[in-house]
Image (cartoon, one colour):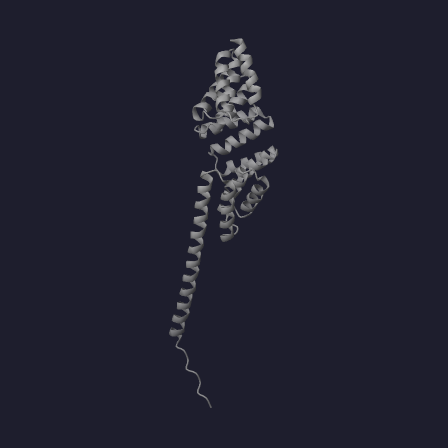
Amino acid sequence: MSPLPKRIPWLTLALALATVSIVVVLALSLRSRARDRRVDAKTKHAAEMLMVGDYSRAIADYDDALEERPGDVKLLEVRATLKYAAGNLGGALADCEAAIAGGSRGVWATRGAVKAARGDFDGALADYAEAIKVKPEDGSAWACRADALRLKGDFAAALGAYDSAIGFDPKPPRPWRGRSEVRFRAGNYEGAKADAGEAIARDGSDPESWFLRASARKALDDAKGALEDCRKALEVAPREWPKRADLEKWVESLEAEQ
């Protein structure tokens, strides 16, 4: 009759199990750290690609990062924004939906922008409202909402939203430019001129701001000032600017008035 195996003391068994657990946790931790390093490298490279305007490679980097961390909400939020900026509205919308399904609260404005670009202003306004609920003092979300209201033709509501955007964050030129257009449409030419001037002070490279101030000056019978602003708009505008041809004709007309 063979002898019975010796019983393993419970303390020895407990120590062995604890050692195995530590080894497993350490291995998982090392794998997680390695994965984090790969993700960090990809997002860093994506930032470098954005610096040179290469959206396709930046998006590819986030594709790789999401393979490492499938469903990561923050990565989805950034990729959605990149796809929107690159004009891939369908891809941006899909990433927004996935991020929202994962509990994101920071992608509402991006989805609103996608919907606005598709002409769904009611859907965009609903999303911007959600973005404002999350962060009521977000000037950018208010500016987005104001733009959607303006494009929808609700100028009174747009004016109020632009006021909020500027009140919360007066630094960007965008809400000043938008409010200038709304004020011009309402016949408030002095207000339109002042707002366009504020936009120009913040970014003099946007021909639209110069055009808006030129329009306000012409409405105020300042043909000389309008001509100066038109010339500046043409100076800073890219060749493909949609208003270039019409503005060149307007310059000829204003020059004839001098």
